[in-house]
Length: 226
Ligand SMILES: [Zn+2]
Ligand SMILES: [Zn+2]
Image (cartoon, rainbow, N blue to C red; front, side, top):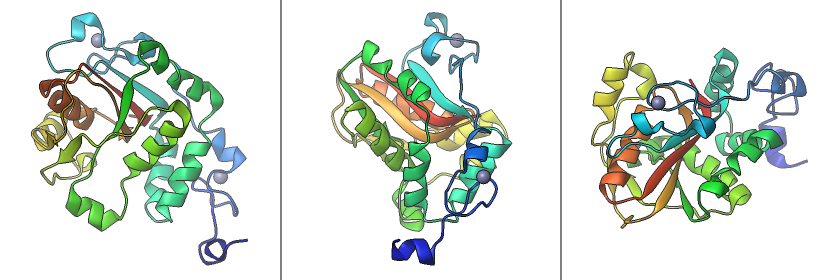
């Protein structure tokens, strides 16, 4: 047993059961996304690809989600904030089932040359939180996919937390112009990584910045979809 396990014992994030972050009973409550949808019209779409009719200049090419962001997962993700968060995210990623990982491996059929780009935090937010959860998740997917991690994007504007803004329109105005591409991305294929996408406004804005800088394709992969 490690000292940190004595000082910070593990409790199930769903029910408080001692010794594990997600107990087997709560694991069953997580609902994997079986049918992905187009990120722009929310109608079914194979692998979450943007329908050709929904594709316009500088849009995301597709969004793949692993779990539904239901009340249970909201509780889990919220309670992660109060734990040793880096540890918890590492454990949480480990419980992603092989079927979902199989889904992620479909990216290989699109290209073998993707870069994984975590949605960056603004430096002030990063300092406050101490880590970027999107980066931890991207590290997990890197081990699984073998795609390199990228650092093409910076967050140049501190924005209000998207979750506190009620409407999609507010979320869009909050995030517009928040990202800057700081490394040449001409012709590159990129998968954006984040923990949660509800309206997807943050991811879409990041995709817009990358495409306008010349990225060839921009997909997104999120742990939870609202
Ligand atoms: Zn539990
Ligand atoms: Zn569509």
